Length: 490
Ligand code: BG6
Image 1: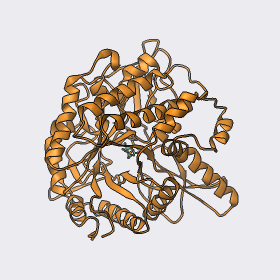
Image 2: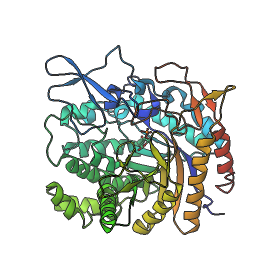
Image 3: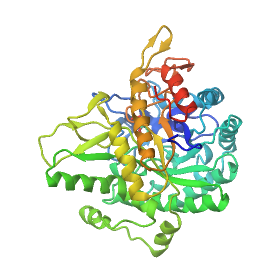
Image 4: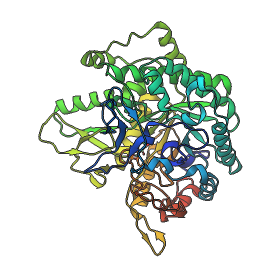
């Protein structure tokens, strides 16, 4: 058998993209609650607000622009906000966990919404209703022998923090996060032993939706924010070990796999730099406990001075992550030649690889890249890897009351098959969770129509649907894969 006996199989969702109940159970609003949906070609996700002159205004969500000075985020009744109800996991978690159990899951990844636990920071007090919600979810998992892996931060910090502290440039956010983690580790001791600190922490380097309600941008802002998050993560790794010796606390990086478009040495160099800039900047620091040498180049190019203290150096050293979790969807090419055609991703972009297909939302399919990446990362970090997101977003069509999704099965089959080879080649993989096994709201476009699920959820982009769950063909296929511990991929 290629995969270890205790290999973890499951799926991954997130609080903000699945739970809904955006203003129920004491939760405070998060930035995504103010975002309407878009689509990949003509219309980006949009944040709506009232500007400083009292006028209704809006801005695209996935940009580096900060929400303008004096703006007030507001919900408008004439707009539809997909994240408000999402897939209503909040009210369907028992049914969903039963379906997970039917598929034979040994794990399940979701995030804890910070805004449910501390809606208004430490100063506002713990929201007990939020604490109990997740206790119920994890207890239900335990009932079904599902050993969850839980992400502490995934696009769901209260907007309150942005308004009060201006976001992650403020070191107070570190204290706030550590306290939030302390509550989670303490309350869920015995129910959860695998944790991830920040989801795709490297995405912040691309100015993504983790959100700022900043007024004036500081030149080095994103590096300061990432630095503060990495310090917070390192503290939380240490704390997690102190609270429960059984805890494993990992980091999570967006898996950006790049190839040089040509054999031009400039393309090769540029590709390597891209890997350092986008992936290793965070992964090296969190997996090795100090910033790598090449940051000298990055900080010089970007005129960054982080003023790292001796104390912070010790914190990073003492908080090395136990495992490296990462997402992998596609690969990109990098070139220094100007005439290359670009290809899509949800945030980062690259140029088009002529050897690959781009069937869905302009994202490439590259399962060999997955194997290459698994080998590459294990060689570099020599710590267990956890594949926490992998999947295909596609339009699903119901026929005779059923969803036949051979395209999704093909995607997952080819990726699991390459992961199996990597394991046979010596890579230590702890587990694999497909992304979005229960249809949810796309992070980049805000669409429900971009479906990753093994389970279909009846909700469309206009808010019509009754949230009933139905099994797609991929549900039965994945069940077979899990039962055979990855041996039967037919
Ligand atoms: C990952 C994110 O990068 O990509 C998920 O962690 C996201 O939250 C996933 O949903 C797929 O991207 P999208 O834009 O298709 O939802």
